[in-house]
Image 1 (cartoon, each protein chain N blue to C red):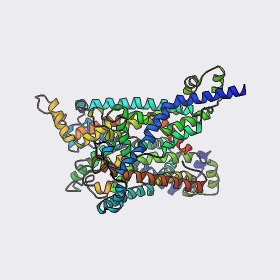
Image 2 (cartoon, rainbow over the protein chains, first blue to last red):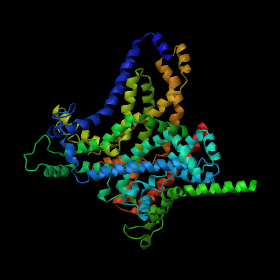
Image 3 (cartoon, rainbow over the protein chains, first blue to last red):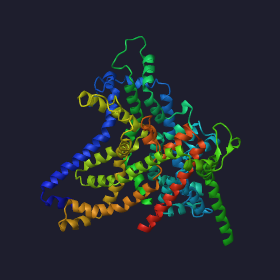
Image 4 (cartoon, rainbow over the protein chains, first blue to last red):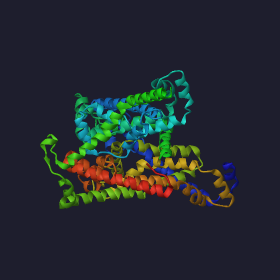
Length: 305
Length: 307
């Protein structure tokens, strides 16, 4: 319909001009969004000498992958990768299961004082004690400087609970009733009947939680002083600020007696770029693959709001 | 019989509460219990000591905030930054609306999808990475400077990052770079929900492209825009600290320090944990008031609450 109507209209001069301007602006902005990532990647695989002189702008030159081998020798990087991957996996699994479980339980009308407990959880979205009281709390609970500070405080996410609850309320209750007639308890109903039907919403929650965990920076900054527990984001921040000394460190550990090869010799620039790519690559892979789940998440949020 | 079944139901109901009890405890521990920390604002807390070993000072910190000259001056600078950055954020919040409207005018579907995918990616990287990118491109040895130097346009490298000039502008530009594509998605969805017959009818009446946009598309996006606007007013004092923390340095500190960052800086690295708590309390109270106010406005204007 719409296409036909478009075709019938004669093409006007202003129309063409509009199209040119419109496409140009969007393509320019798209380029501005894509280029920085491309720039990091080509610089991390090009000759380190050329890249530290700012000679690599559009195409990689003298491609090599020595940088990636070298940065993983930096003390702390592999530990940080393990920490970041672990918190992403464990943290996501915990919050997804808790959201599903709580969301389901809050749909049970027979629950004792249901609306009170529901509000008790949901209202926590709207206030926060603040940074220092949170810090003191973690200290009191002996969570600071432990891995669990990344996981436990984030398990109950009111917003996710609301999303699951709304989702379950939209599926026919006959499913649950049929199972209850067969004598299934509330836990059986949850695991056998409800959980499998919730996968779409849980996938959305999972992908958001995973990105949040991977990108989280502030919690390491505030609660962690033990270097073994640094997350990748935090380590990247530290490395960005002290790449000079790091480059010296890598140089001395890898070039054993040999004449330093300028192509693969580490420079502050090469270290910064390579670590940045290590941190960003998972997002660049995962985002386009799961884009529809991300979009779904914001839509549900909007409907709720 | 009836009594028995109600009793049974009641038992089941209590059992469910027991089943979720661990999570209720978590919710209490990390949302309600931390409020006890507000008491630190009434003491002169020194780091390794116990609270009972510290001096009780009552409202001293709150008085300091408004009476001590240097403290007031410092806070004024911080509030100026906070207001400026929040205001710039609100002033530019209509750009994602335009982004969505004009992206929707693109008829070539694969280009549209490509633009949408690529422009939303920056939203999903951390501020640390944004800083890494900023460093790679705009530091004195970065890509922009070395390009300009080589082309002979400048003689000495421009200090984009280590300077106190245009800090607000560059911060808002980075926020826009990061959030523009993503913030437009909600409006794109709203556009796809508009009844196509409206457009058909308007076209029959001879309306041009811009008339369609102005009279149909924009008005149908206003309700969504209004909600977003209300939410950003509610979080006027909460700029977050990640962005400003990673970009802050000795040169730009006076123009970049927003309230959230200031609380961190004086609480965790500097002066006084108690003073930081006092500021945090005031911030929480003002934020809560703002939230209720915009909710009230929203109820009046569109007859629906936003919280």
